[in-house]
Image (cartoon, rainbow, N blue to C red):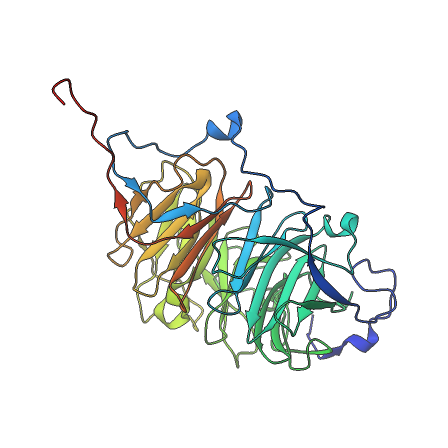
Length: 404
């Protein structure tokens, strides 16, 4: 399937549930929804407690590098982004949408007035991206929302039913500019706030792989699936994983097609990302069974070949690793099932367990750090939001003996 330029002017089919019926952008004011979503703490169920990660003995030092932030939701959280050092938004399942004005210390529930309560709760908002007061929110069933005033008001952007695949990611690039990808590998760019989108890749991933049937990439021939976990680095390069987890792909600006790569292991890929958000510095890869691999620097991922990976020493007890992120100082943090957290201070050679979330039930899915203030957040199920607080370690108080 070849990808071409398209305009929202042709999206006149009212049968598509996620396209506004009149194609008029309904501008919505943002307001608190205290009466609709009352505050709920994170409930600890017996079932969740039974799958908690490794528990340190009572005499062990208690890590306070991450602290839980109380929020007005108990649904799964998917993404977080900041417009300034203090102002940001968070999105998640069942219409979860919240705003902070103090760097993430406190959060207030928000909603879109052009989505009624019953409609909004059906959406799973998966991505939020801001730059210079302009922001985008992407969700499922397919919905795209846009703001130009720091989130005070939002408009719904029509999406074409002819898109190859479903919208998968969105990133704000400046005034009226954004980039969107789909589950079929399409990359679209707009410079007029979503009125028109221009294809950056000439064909979908399945077309590329089936055309290059002798590529030697395991699982790529006669590929008919989709891709998942699309991520973008600071230069505009993309990394994606086959929905089957049997190979991965890269694309850089100026290239006509995605480039497939062997994973170099029989284990299924769980997730992938960039080292320090730069394709040139390499990529990391998590596999089923709690494995983590990091590629050496200076590998040319613009070539169709197997990438060399080095396995990190990390004791997960079999819990899967869902995301990895670098702090500006080079420290590496990984999160995963049962709210497990790990840290490496030697470039990823060895990870140690951090027990900040040891007693919190659930799973962590996303960890992000922000350069402006070195603030970090980990998001997960059950409305769990952890905020990076620093490098303090609090030692437990010693019990007094009989002699005092």
